[in-house]
Image 1 (cartoon, rainbow, N blue to C red):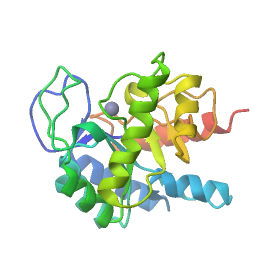
Image 2 (cartoon, rainbow, N blue to C red):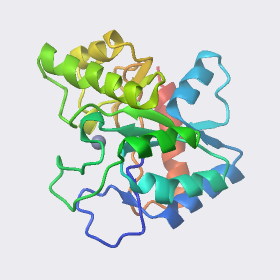
Image 3 (cartoon, rainbow, N blue to C red):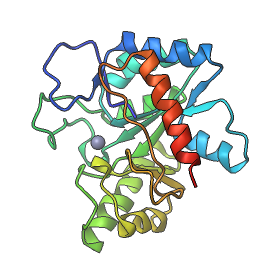
Image 4 (cartoon, rainbow, N blue to C red):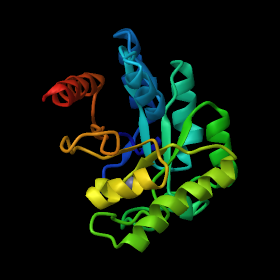
Amino acid sequence: MYHSISPSRQPDPHRVRVSPERLDRHLRLLRQLGLRGVPLAELVAAQDGAAATGLVGLTFDDGYADFLRYAAPVLDRHGMTGTLYVVAGRLGGHNAWDTGPRLDLVDADQVRAVAAAGHEVGSHGLTHMRLAGADPGVLRHEVADSKHVLEEVLQREVSGFCYPWGAFDAAAAEAARAAGYDHACVTGDYSPRNRFTIPRSYVAPGDTAVHLVAKLVRHHVRIRRP
Ligand SMILES: [Zn+2]
């Protein structure tokens, strides 16, 4: 789980920024290990067919506009693709849910450009609100309406959902299923585990390629634990 990819030197109080050089080193090491980064939807489909060996799901939360400028070229260079989870009600806006520096979010044209470049676009809700404990109407609005907005923009199905703040409960997972998503992902939460609570490992700004591989190994062990 990455967020912003940028060479910016602005303060990063929420630790969401990894530099393009660092991402490049991460992906180079994955490649040297015979691993290939893919969108989460591709990983889930491969797992359904028991053919996921050698694949790593790469996800980028919040739909920062820097994805196209900085992340996509690095991914390209390594023959990899990923998932950008977009806050559907804030297209062309900024990360107003955070107290840190203002970061631009993709607009509708950029959402289309991300998909056209071979990446997956998933939903990260309408406004980036916490869904754990949300009432049914709010859940439906955030989960289902964000899917519709993105599908209208892309003119194709959006099959992946990502809970803002990693905050989910049984009702939020059920809302994702009921809205017609194929799967949804959480953050560092390894239980309960099903296709609407897929765990991910957070990549920190200072993680070296070796840290990344250590996190991958730990993730692999944890998802296999009964
Ligand atoms: Zn987020």
